[in-house]
Length: 258
Image 1 (spheres, rainbow, N blue to C red):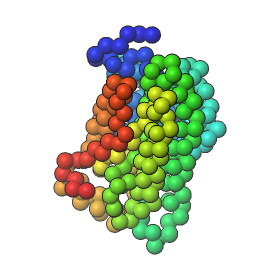
Image 2 (image 1 turned 90 degrees about the vertical axis):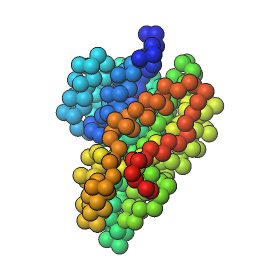
Image 3 (image 1 turned 135 degrees about the vertical axis):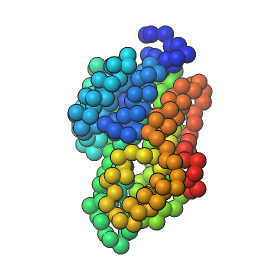
Image 4 (image 1 turned 60 degrees about the horizontal axis):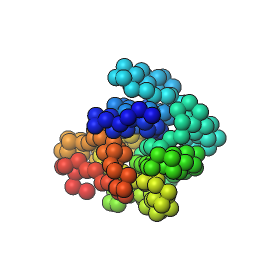
């Protein structure tokens, strides 16, 4: 195993990032690789992943692209097997894939409800189910592993028309607390990151006019977080001493009031 250095504190660690084809996932994969981790990047868009792996390689890092839809449990298990075979057992999982589709509940946009539940909850659980055995095994051998889940400030605060999305993120935060209690004794740290508004592709999926107007107004009055802001937070969590577990990190734009 390569010796860790102050500039590459994650040397020797094996990271998995879901939702890695853009936004927070892509930025986090690049940052973790820059910190010395070997990174497996999972998403559905092969071309995006290939570009990401090329960027990481050009910067001196190492990454493995795995095309997988996290809502497909069998595909995620296959991805986990490939990570173990090609890189070794993952000891850092950034469970980041998600989607945001706000709309008034009276519109009964049931297909959008289901997409959010399928990706933000079922997809999250598929990834946790596939990779937790690796995290536990790696933590036993190396002394620490990290499971970091992307939640949202919507898990805590009230955003009208965001009820289903907010509900899925409340699930992520509360689940993370329970998993921390369950896995902490096995040296697996569990953290939930709750960002405020981050400028990513997430907003481009929104179709509800009221939500689009609210987002546009927010962008005019507030400097949004960048994916790199969240990526640095992921890196900070993972580089803390093994005795330290940041259970929940709320990361807000300075100008966003709630």
